[in-house]
Length: 221
Image (tube, rainbow, N blue to C red):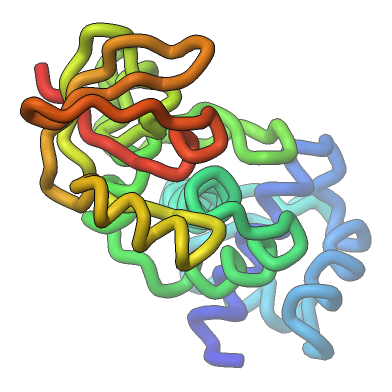
């Protein structure tokens, strides 16, 4: 494992330990071994202390300001990646956790901010742990207004542009395309029950709730 990734893994473990009120060095060993394999934790922590990332006080690991910010960003990337994978791509919890462990090391700040905006700035991850904000906290209205949402969550009478489709079956994708539901198309939602009734130009289509869940749209103000 690259040195920078190992440091991120340790910072992540320290963050989790503080969330659980168990920031002792001994409590970190199991978590770090699980995520990063075999290595000398004490030596790594001493090196991180020399780098100004943590402070070691009586067997307890505390963050410096620099270390807390770096750890916050790692946690933010990880938890947003989990939400993206599970909420949008319908990936299993186990797989999303494995992939998020990779994404937390590679996502840039710009991409992370865009993922947060795309999801509507969720405040907790799939397990209920809080998702830290970046350097510029979102405005209150942004918490409930994701850039892209499922068609099933669009308000009646609202218009939106289709962003992408996630059909469970390829044949369903072909059927939606044949009806004109393609990325870039603007549609208007007329009703939600008993079926979702949408209008595309002069055409009206009735969609089952399951299909409406697989169509992602960007609302038009």
